[in-house]
Length: 259
Image 1: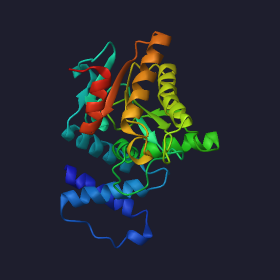
Image 2: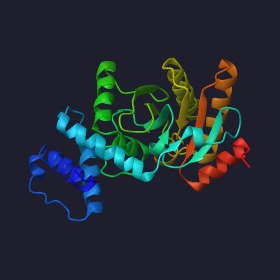
Image 3: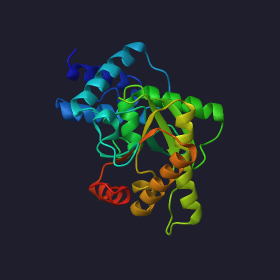
């Protein structure tokens, strides 16, 4: 199958799960097909699907990621011992684990093609990730507490694991509790990573954006918490601060002293 044929196969399989969409016509344009496929994956509830779908989906997603270009941690230069700053798409980063800024339901973003990192990670990991997260939440029996973390395989992402953490949502002025909970996100991820033998972890800008934590203050908490953890535990785990926007890149450059 060509990449376009794989995409069409996956769309037809997903449309077949929804009787109300069975009369939906296949877009002729490949970009529109990709948008439709992502939308169908985003709204799909966590449930099993056939191996025929998974085989094609896995090949499709890995080719999509390869086409975007994969960055390996070995290609990066540290800004201080064991700490890196990298601007790019976290779903294309090859390291042991990446951090997902999740919501308390922990099964991903269900808004079609939403630009949040939760949506991006679930899209390019594949439908297996939502099912794995749902299994963890069913076992737990309640929503994830703010500041906590869970770990899952990364499936079709270049990394090995995804660490899912729930950051605080800021309403108005930042409180001391908000600061404490954000620091707990970073600490929880580092501790869970260490427990699972993770040697390198990439953090996104947790709680900024949709959760409205001010970028500069959030970055300060992130850097301080990581440094404290590394000092207190004598950890040699490599940490990447991943940013996507130029504004965040400038903030972290100032905090980390990158030239």
